[in-house]
Each structure stands twice: as C-alpha cells, then as structure tokens.
Image (cartoon, rainbow, N blue to C red):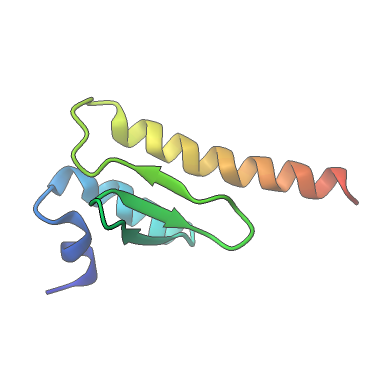
Length: 80
C-alpha cells in the first residue's frame, strides 16, 4: 500500500491536495485525531480536516499552504 493511499484513507478527494503539498516540499502526515498535518522546515504547521464537508476545503487548504510560504518569504526579505 502506497504512502499516498495511507494518507487518503479512502477519501479520494484528498489526493490532489496531498500531491500538491508533496510537490511543494511539504511533509504530510496524519494526526492521532485523523486530521492532515502539513510540515515544512521554518514554517508553521498547517492542519486540515480529512473529511471536510465543504467543497471549497481543498482550495482553502492549498491557499493556507501558499500563504504560509509567501509570509515566510516576505519576513525573510524584511530581515535582510
């Protein structure tokens, strides 16, 4: 069983979000409560529901991942 399959746990709508995060260098794991946890060194952890009822949840999670990266880049430039 692949790691991606274990992370989706039958929720196929999660696959594009997980693939996006992995391609962007995020580490993806499950919390003990079943939520998705996205980690990247130097950035705050991002949590997302694994069984979201809102059809916009994937787009919102992607936006949070991108926003965290942009914020870190902005802060890095300000401190130079």
